[in-house]
Amino acid sequence: MTTRKITTMALITGIVLGAAATEGFNVYRQSHDSQIFQERLRCKAVADAYVKENSSDTEGITEWVSLIPGQVDYSPARNSCVAGVETTHVVRGSRPMRPISEATVEDLLSGETLFSAKCPGDCVGVEVMFVKRAFDYVMNNASEPIELEKEMATYLESKSPPKSAPPSGH
Image (cartoon, rainbow, N blue to C red; front, side, top):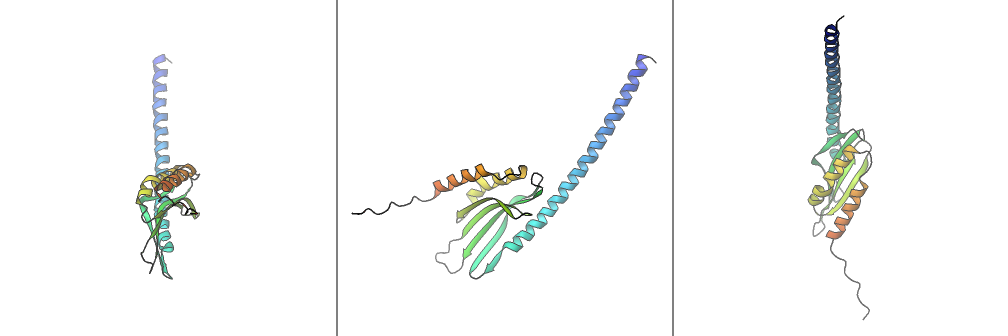
């Protein structure tokens, strides 16, 4: 065989093997993408059920549970469904009526609270600054966002009104 024939055979073999490897990778990726899509659909259904099960209106206390938009997904790192959740508690008949809100990141399958922020009134600022980052963190990590919890506690402390000094003994 001449060098030209050997080179041609090697080139054809390389092209065939490359095409087969590319096709195999595409089949794997489509299968994986389909699996992730199915998990996301399941997580959406689990999240809707979570809202229904955890909202209540009993004995003078109303508790509204809602999902934070864009924060329900399947976490491959946790192999679970994760959601950003806002819960508002209102005690009826209290004057003035002061709702207490809590923004959390929940593992919907295990029931574990991965991140929690209690807010006097509205949690919008905390959601934007911390809950979204906590959600992103747990989507990619199996651990809880401990450093983010500390950062949020410091932030909330700085926003709370200063405590008055104890009366002097005069």
